[in-house]
Image (cartoon, rainbow, N blue to C red; front, top):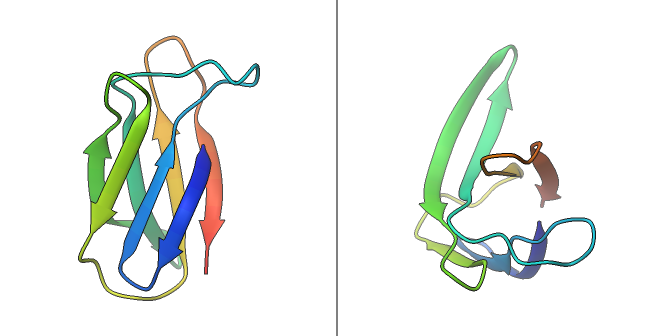
Length: 79
């Protein structure tokens, strides 16, 4: 996951593989962990160019996860 912009309630980026090839239609989730529970805050799909954008979720510290068929999960931390 390549993240371009992180604001308090807004994130945009691009889902790419380790060779920087775009991954269209990937599921992108913003979540936070509370003890042993994962709470999904926002979810979207990447477009045909691998780009995604999410708005209007509460500010805080989150993880972002991208997944797609035939690929393993990718994680990033947002502060």
